[in-house]
Length: 221
Ligand code: 4GY
Image (cartoon, rainbow, N blue to C red; front, side, top):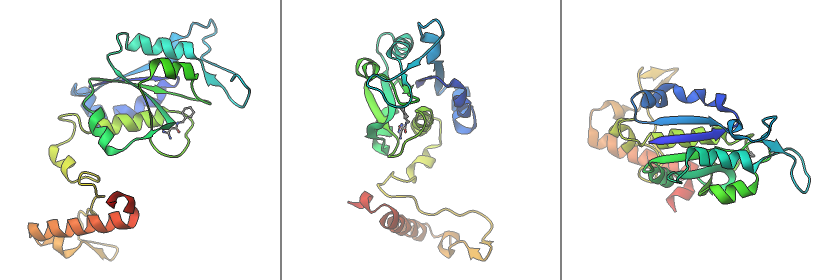
């Protein structure tokens, strides 16, 4: 899968070279292309933002550099073009499963007060929010999207890592423990050390149900 990220702050994406996403890229399973929107501006001073019509605080990203950048990276509109913003539909795990089927994603990161609406109307397929809060830009949401989608690309994680995770059966995940058996007076539940896999499965299902009831009763409805 290829993911192209359009941003005014390409240096923020160095984080994607670490850990599992770094390994996926080196193995050729995931290609991440970070493109500086500024390199597409036709302004002689390389300006990419301007004052909002109608007044108000802050700056708005201009349609021209954004539109030209999108057309530059996806000329035939073969990609799914996504704008990250709090106005989008909130990302949920079911949508992550469907996005990972795409050959090419183009992620547009807004900054300041946002992007000229005409660039969104003309060039964007879908607006996605990662949650009901406001950030300074779409860069961290783009990284969130890359991360959760990349986990489902074949060979990025072991298949076993994906079966028992939170949301896989509509529930949150059961608690995990590793050595030592005792830490500051707290011990690992006996059943997990029993070797009785039927009992372990039962305990984990009960715990998953319990934690979901307590923290996310909405998931049970
Ligand atoms: N929440 N989910 C989010 C965000 C910042 C103004 C557009 C979010 O996706 N994006 O808070 N983004 C805004 C800042 C420009 C992006």
